[in-house]
Length: 125
Image (cartoon, rainbow, N blue to C red; front, side):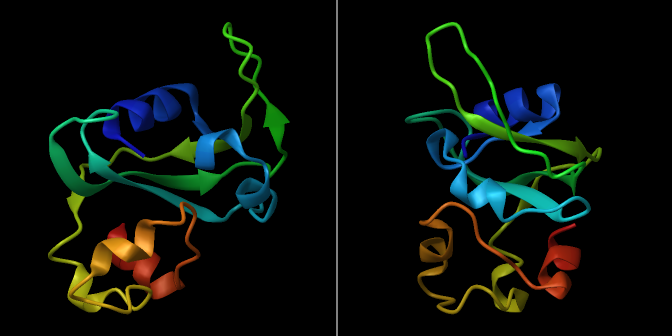
């Protein structure tokens, strides 16, 4: 998710993924770690960023729909975000086990929500 969208989510204390779809969020539970990866600074054509830009924990795990002015009703979860600086992904790639292809590492983020092992989450944090 672009950093400008991440900033809106962190300011609101929520997670919204995959264009507001419920499915990925339904698999999350209270206490689960949550991190946003931002390929770009802004959507759609902002400067390249390639960094983890927010990290936190899912609060209750209760899914809800937001009712936005334009009629868009995305699904969300409340997340307690922590104060953190962006973490560039490239230095982490060699040590992140969920990234199988170290050459084509960006493919690991193509499907939106990715479950990562606890050790990888700790490295990102």
